[in-house]
Length: 195
Image (tube, rainbow, N blue to C red; front, top):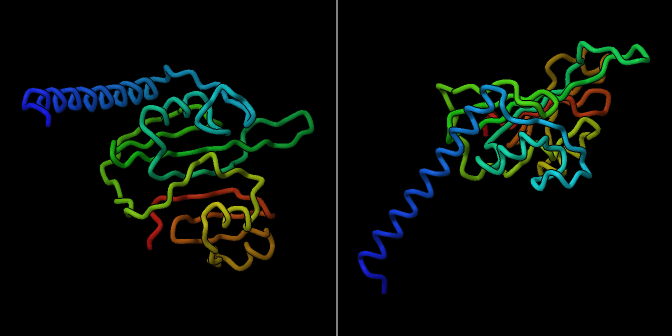
């Protein structure tokens, strides 16, 4: 049995550990807000990021410090740049939500571009699935997204002409809303999905 002094010491040590984690998280969020964190994108096969393929160094560092985001949004949008063939390339934009820190962090192609507080943070259900932004990419078809989400998706027809002419389809599950355009994932949101 532990003595009262050992219990007090253990509680004191735990408090300092929690304070250290909070301080480290706050410092990282401040550094991201001021653009001081290196954000070199890693390739899926790179060993530079232990947290998983598809994360930049800044994202991997954020995950190490704060854990995986509670919820997130991913969108692929045309960039302003035109490549050598005259085609527009796509940029991956992400917003990660850390509900317990009341923060949202925005990325463009893995580079942090904004850190914002949130006055209204929706509650995530206790059975919210553990999903990762790295699990989703533009080359995914409907079946691929359903496999990661672990549930079938129901199509929501917002504009029949859009679905027919542009081959753009919106789907919803209990854990995500997403868009498949011409057979590819172009948008996914895990926050704000009503059960």
